[in-house]
Length: 301
View (tube, rainbow, N blue to C red):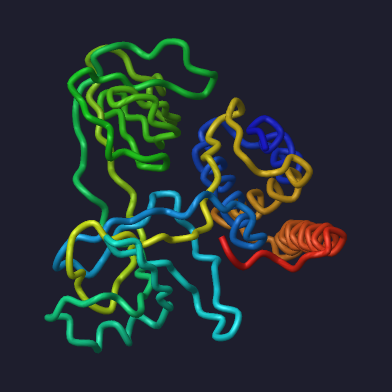
């Protein structure tokens, strides 16, 4: 999907989006794109490989994590694959976090179960000063360059603020350890020039909680997960979702956008119905293709 089409369809659905409201519109688009992945379970990157830390009973998930998808055929519980240093593997099952918290966490052991924890408090804020002016960015986007920075821990969708011009926005991509691609809104210039001060606020992340602290460093937990698509916060942006359903995703974004400003039950129902119908169409077509291929929905990876 591309940002220009999403903006065009959305403006048609709600009668236009004013310049000061673009920040809220693109956040609604991001919500709708993520909702599409959740409902269709369609964006599955390679499993995240998380390394254990001796004595620690949790592992942080990737910033683009939006949900698990691999389940047991018999128990229907989510499954993760645990591999020890010798290459032996064990499948561990998901349980309610309350069951994990009720266990004795004082003795390290090989894990037998896990729980998915809600996003926890964000990490350390990053502050600095731009060492170059933003040039060459697509319309509606900007670059942040700081030769003294280390952006290795920054991820798309982390919040960013230009505290010099008062703009607020989001990280779109990490171009290098010292360069970020951003979208900024509602400031004086919505860009960064030489000497502008900035602040980056890391987003909260989901975590896997193990039923016991890890015995040793370096064991691996493979997590098959659903990923949020690349963030679109400008007409020049794009992501991995199929263009065929752009209109439906834009209508859900319009519903989310209108929900924050006014409430019209009839219009809201119309906008959400279009999205629900598109999800159903996608699922039917996927089922038809799998049936034609003579196989069931894949369960292993």
